[in-house]
Length: 491
Ligand code: FRU
Image (cartoon, rainbow, N blue to C red; front, side, top):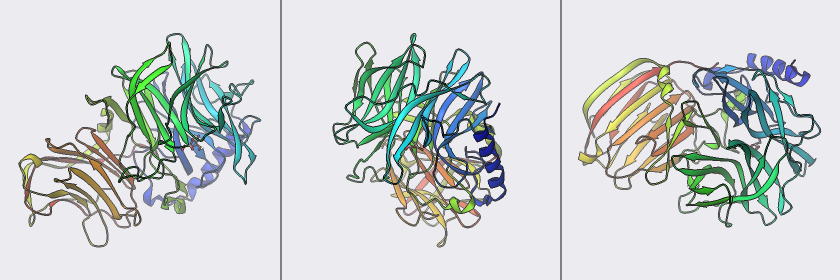
């Protein structure tokens, strides 16, 4: 039976849906039916279906008391909305059901999440606890009667203690949690449990030496290839030498882990994505053995024009993670994304583009995939790329600089007037291949098979008219180009 708070949230969403302005609604990315969302939570394949939960405020287009919204899918591409899964207001989650994860415990879908509890809301003083909620049908959840399952962080911590990610290794459950020391040093701590209800503190899995922020949110720990990856979203890293341009980052460290000693020997921190809008990523393993990641496709405190339209926030497309020979993670769309290809609108090979002779695809479609390979190895061009709607009033530019070996996205005339550019380093010595996904108010660019990714929200005013492939000087050959109109896969 649905609890009263869940029914009320559902009614509020039905009413809010009626008022939505559709202009920037996405066609194939996860959003709530209306109002606010942030982090992806509880990613899991359960009884054959993919489930994604998310931080959600069903009553407002701004962040507020956090609920868990919920969608599910048979193919990880076509999503169906489910009732809100959990609502805050119990003794242990009075101020919100914050981020967390999901596991399949012998057929019982178990959500493990943070209860946020204000001491004084105005002063933003709070404490955080870890809790569970269970379901047998994957749709209705009951909170555990003896919550919290972890009432407080270790004694050397401050109040930041959130975002449990749980997995099973051999016959034990493990949990990583984001935390901060009394000296304001971000870290990830580890617990184990025989049954998801009783937890023992093991110790620190990894910590900042002081240079990586005051709090590590949304940790995730998993094996990739023959290495271990700790991913997390640090708060408080300073901008430095063009690095870390976003308010907060989401990145990873890769290394070797010894479960018996809780010893994680790892390398440096790298960001997953070079765009404006990627945060709080979470991953899961599916039944094909793929490690799939989904992030929040926005950034805290950024300009979010869809608030005027009655909704705010979306998740990235599902991305498969693999580890490169250099121990850096590559992200690529899961192959099922091709199910969305409705019509091929361009298919070209060996097109020469020069300063006075660009190549254009005429299209008014707003949901598109564009795959292009530039032969930059045999080119004298210094700057090349593509423009969506190139014009003085409105354009989105992706420009590759051959000397710097960098791809820049410039959204200054596409809804991000301030802080409009982001750059990704690209390896020299290879052709430049770009897979660009447009979905009304988002762009995701996968460079050289996931070597780098740029994800940004965009807010065009006008309809698309064309996509132009250009060079500012010299000549370059487009070795291959294909573009598809995309289908809608969520309402
Ligand atoms: C990350 C985060 C989490 C927290 C949630 C609250 O974006 O701050 O640490 O659980 O959002 O909505």
